[in-house]
Image (cartoon, rainbow, N blue to C red; front, side, top):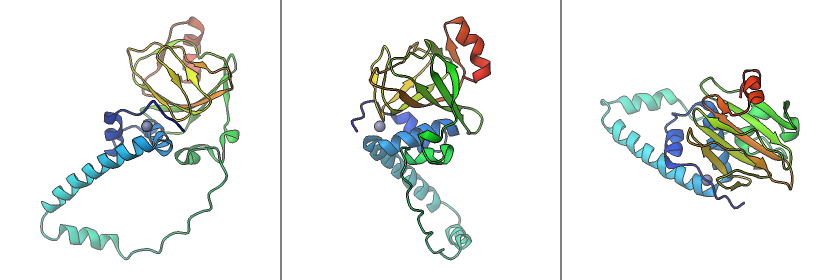
Amino acid sequence: MSIRHHLSDPMLIAYAAGNLPEAFSLVVATHVSMCDTCRAQLATFEAVGGAVLAAESAALSDGALEAAMARLGAPEPALAMPKPKHTDLPAPLLDYIGGSLADVKWRSLGMGVRQAILPTSKGATARLLYIPAGQAVPDHGHRGTELTLVLQGAFCDATDRFGPGDVEVATEELEHTPVASSDGACICLAATDAPLRFNALIPRLLQPLFRI
Ligand SMILES: [Zn+2]
């Protein structure tokens, strides 16, 4: 898989620090599971975090480390790993969807575009988007940040082409009209922390209904 669009360092650092809303963490974890580059970068940031923790624990009062270790108790025998099921889903998405993309409960957004909102904590929304081949998502802007990760197929907007594993980070400055490639449907995982800003009236009217 040749991935050209990656997560930013601040995004990876926020993920490593546990500072992202669940919807964003899900997109980051899914991209990282598909992308060797970001996985290596994340490991670096996690090592830095570990070094900070080690330095801090050295400053704890005498006996604090022993007390914490004692609370952990005796090591438990390792759990038997469940057999990996045959699936077309990256691992972090399995718990949110079930077995495969075929199990997704889609809701129509019109013009063949479909979505499925995934259950995450409040503060940001995660959704799967299904865009039929050649179809455009209505032109929209962003009030916050939108992360869009391609799981299958590809889409293009004014900035570039995004294929499987690529992630687009859209901020308030970007207005775009993503169009699915004509080769086939495009399935994306997207996270937003504020409602999108549609330029056309009909999508604007439908917005509250679809929580988009
Ligand atoms: Zn990456």
